[in-house]
Length: 63
Image (tube, one colour):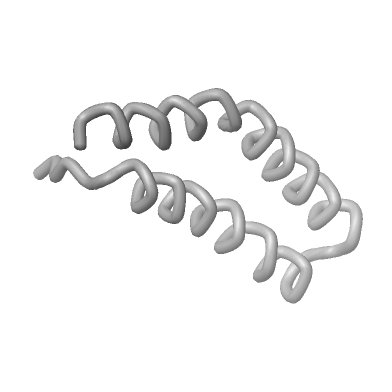
């Protein structure tokens, strides 16, 4: 089931996912693998910036 949530909640959920990938990778995997996961997580966050701006500005426009 898909549930619509406010933009800020969406952003927090998107931040939670890479955090949930990066932190355990450093604890469980060799450094080279953890570095790869971290780099991919950072790339994801960089590419999400425009969407986050849109989510935050769209939420204000509808209030």
